[in-house]
Length: 258
Image (tube, rainbow, N blue to C red; front, side, top):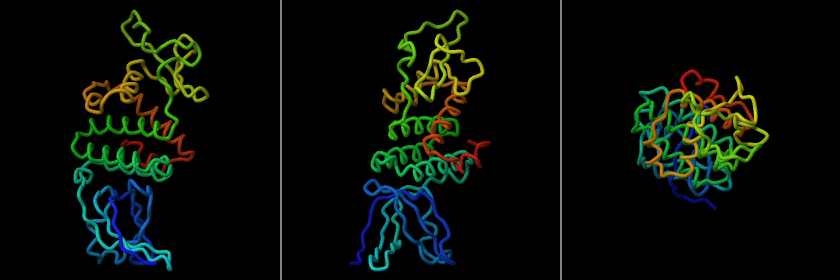
């Protein structure tokens, strides 16, 4: 049985298929990751519409006897023009789409769709610095969607709260180190954190906790130092790549920009 239908989607990627066609990967809130063929290549009137990160209503024709699905039209509702002008935004979008494809929307298409479009729309309206913070927030929330977000409240060894510890006499926040075995953060009292990978300050940990508990607009108003941004970037990249169980090409290619 053949049929025409449409669905709300965000385009994730395009790859050459045959001589003149393209295989289009997209995400919908109902079906998650899907694929369809865009016929006609450079001559197709849809070439300028079916582009990565565009969002709207995609019209499809499915031929079940041939097991094919082709794109017949695309009513684009949202473009992201600033991505063509800013390398970070472009690389960040490519990074998150690779994660989503490899993890199959974390098994939650609707929530994944909402998170992705929130990031894309937010970056398009933001400065590069704000977009970097937005990427951190997306990755942390996506780890929660995957069900592997580290526990931030207490040290897994001593059980004491990280957020009730006093500031040290020198005025600097105490530090914690991520423990893969515990999937949590161990305090300074329970381990030697000197030069250990994925060590972050309590202020960075507080930011992660805020992402989980505050409204997005409230989190966006929280200031974050460059040092904390760097710490959280390294931590979230590590955790995300580990969750995919493979090296991410977008991260290797864009590491100097991301």
